[in-house]
Each structure stands twice: as C-alpha cells, then as structure tokens.
Amino acid sequence: MFTLQRLSGIITLIFVIYHVWSFRISSLIFGTEVNYQLVQEHLMNPIIFIFYVVGVLSTTFHFTNGLWAGLITWGVTVGPNAQRISYLAKMRFM
Image (cartoon, rainbow, N blue to C red; front, side):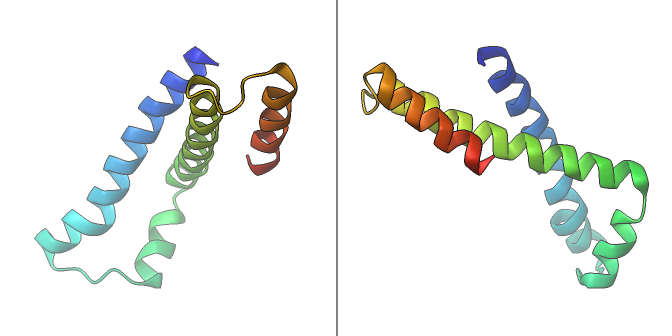
C-alpha cells in the first residue's frame, strides 16, 4: 500500500494539473468559455477519456487509502478488529 499510495499521489498530481490547465488556465488565456460542449469535445478523445478515468480512480484510491492510514497512524483504529472494519469501509467507498 505504501508504494501504491505514492504512485497514486503522482498520478493524481499530474491529473489535477492537467485538469486545471485544460479548463481554467487555458480558458483564461485563450478566452474560451467552459461549458458542456467543451467538456464533451475534450472527452471524445479516447486517450483523454482513459486518462480521466485513471485520474479519478487514482484520486479516489489516494484519498481513501490516506484516510485509512491516517486513522491507524493517529491511533483512532488501534486494534486489528478496528483496522479490519476501517479497511472494509475503505473498500466499500473506493
């Protein structure tokens, strides 16, 4: 999980930077309006669509695994039973 947390963090960072560039910064620079049609045209490219699916999954994993690890580190889920329950909750929301 340690390696997956780091890998998902890198993927999430790249995804967020690309997303902010695509729909916020570039629209300010080039004066384009961000609307449904722009997003639809953007996601029609299969490579970008796959990148978005991987980015959202990576972000979800990174968030839920970080919460799970944080609960253990901060001493909220101390025993094995509490850690198992929090792991099952993590897997349900992923």
